[in-house]
Length: 435
Image (cartoon, rainbow, N blue to C red; front, side, top):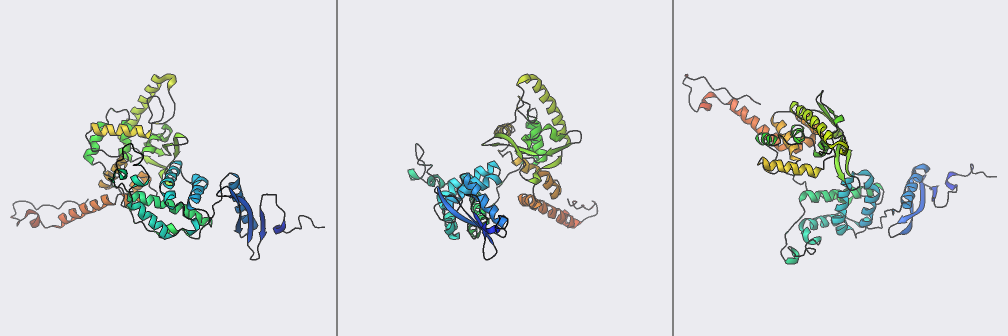
């Protein structure tokens, strides 16, 4: 009599709906089962593995996704169907919420309208290149129907095209989203290669920023004197912290006696949770920095002011624990901070810049003072020193030019400096020291 223990593993009976698992003649294991497919249909899929456990795990994952109502992607399906699956079942678990929201917008506005009808298995590099060229040269105001939705057409509908085209940075971002989606399709063995990687869009020029000069920075700090959020603006200009990192600081993160701050989170608004604390941008962004003496004094005064606000608010105080809050203790919105910042710029009669340019200003001023690049990298929380070197390459080039000019001045003879022969009455000029 044959017992279940004697039955070969490839012939054991599995529960109804669990699919089948068996070993092939080439020694590989194959698992097959029915899952939900695009169009609300059922499809039999096959997965392979070097062991029975591996093949069964792959099949179980697909069946579990099918039971949750997510159709399995198929090479016979369209690009639009796969993008929907990738965003809903894969990217949502791997990306930060705000990043996932941007990816979804890119797919809805550009990827699906341009490539959505094409079959995933038949998508070629030529298709991607043609689509990108069309995206680069067409007016988005007219393509997306924005003009026809106006009460009074101003663009194509009025035969006056505004030529509002995508910037090179946006075009590169759209291309990167498509590459990420197709890369996952390659890992899931839906397609043999990522055709989007074979298309070159060119390296876009980095976004230009205009950091504050030393004089402008002093003027700005003078304008913040007496402002309720003066310590925040001082901290931004002295340390280069990001807006979310500043708003996410808690008193428990500060060591006023030791003069340090631990950057552990960032405060951002998301669609699902509203204003919430999230992990830092990267692992390297979680860091500990030294605080300058002026900032320590301002923070101590800010702590006393916050205690007075707590007493004045009484039962209406919202104990959020953040360093920088509204008068009632609630966290500050990023848009609110931007409005305060723009108001201070107008009061100081300074040119309009972004709040993030305070971060660039801090790094630029540090470079101009001769601070090592690796120190600035640690202060800003960049993942790699190459990021710091690339962003501030123009500053380093200017400093190199200044240093070379100083060296050239030092190597000139006294006669060349004075413009004539030395008559001996005046001491020779000494070349300027090299910084």
